[in-house]
Image (cartoon, rainbow, N blue to C red; front, side):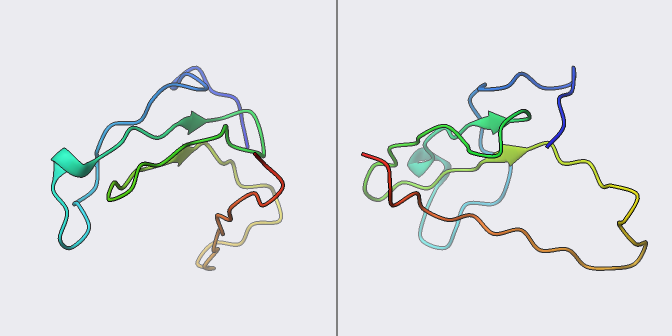
Length: 80
């Protein structure tokens, strides 16, 4: 994660991607932009809604050109 002046940490996301199958932009619920923390702020996603999350990630010197990197988002089972 890297702090950047280009986005505001904690700002709400807007629908940027194509809605999932069976959904419309009316089903979109704002997510959160995170450029500082490794743990994204809590999101209470309503039933039938979809969201987008945004992070600012900077590659380190260990990153290799042409390689594929995958990121995993998980649910915090320790939260309320």
